[in-house]
Length: 523
Ligand code: XMP
Figure (tube, rainbow, N blue to C red):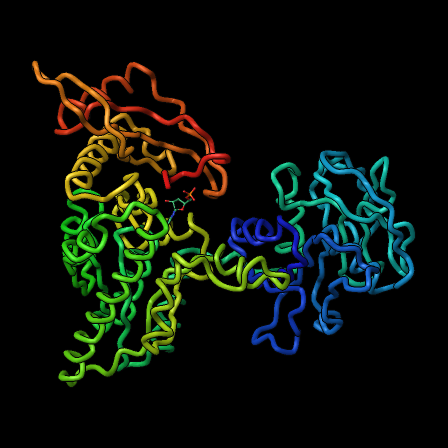
């Protein structure tokens, strides 16, 4: 394992990414991590970049015990400053340097000092980002790279395996950066390249069995989305029917969603699943409500009510059987980016995004949390799903919001509008799949605008709904672009199908706004 200590750079998680791509396992912890509290010994440590100045009074510093581990250390950007500061407090000066692409010239020495740049050319295109620049080297350190502007773009200790680089090897703007990281992790630290999804499945199943024991039971909500399905399948593999998956049909799911999830998860994947049809209750509570935040609250609270009742029922049934014990755990499909967000020492937020943490249910029900996906990025979750035999259709599904179609109908959510949105969405998505755009698109849906327009159907004037089609491309869902590879001709044909086949539809429009300023969902 390579330990990545995060000093708050926006790129830190990319270091972990690059290591994972090398099949090297790594863990990222805040820079304030006490080395004595680590339960494992890293093969090497990377100090990330960060927005601070090492000699500022409130600057974060690494636990000096990191130098007693006797393992290689790589400091990137702020990490380089931190190394220099540790070895000679007065050597760094606060001069600003440039931001963006630049070229570094590698200086070769003899011996270990060169290993970071092994196999690379002497001139490298790299990405620099704001920070101070080093003005003088600490004793026993040498220069390993320079730029026209920075005499110490790369430094190394003359006898110990400590390296600093001012540029960011983890970003794609440093084309050879991944080889620098590989040289460090594999060449210098000798980290094993054995992080694969197959290895992960075995390790995680063993961890789950160890945690849960051979009697306790686990409950979890599933939505039909990739994260909850993969998490549920992993639990099923680890503890079989002692894992109880619950799906609540809230009446604002995609068309036939509950039936399809039931087939996929129970019959296809052998998961112990209960589906509860609570659509009437949800739609009843949503009647007359137009405010989007109120809709979200009603759906969230109703979900909690239903889920808790079901958990009690399952618990009561479980206590009457001899083979198993009490429900003690709550499964949550938290992913690594959510964990990163919550561990950062300066923390934008100390809590996991609320829609990942089903309304505080585990605390309310006094259950312990089990999070088998907490080390994984989204694409790793997909690879894990494929590894466990989950079909492609499910693994590559677009995300779907918890409040479902309710936030895709502007204004009141009536059963008829839900039907219209569901039927239009079915046609939209099946056409997108048919034309093989589905994988290139990150999220697509059909919504109901909630204002009416006129159409003429047969000889009749129809005052009908306007369907709003959206399809976006994004990598992180923070920014997004409208998908633009459809031809107008294709869009016209699909619009025609929706207007003709879905009763009550007068018009169809396609949205071209980006996020920002728009959001992906309508409200
Ligand atoms: P926005 O609309 O904010 O959406 O650009 C970004 C991503 O978040 C999803 N989203 C939600 N998911 N509950 C959820 O579970 C919500 O209330 C919610 N609002 C937005 C949205 O589908 C997109 O993937």
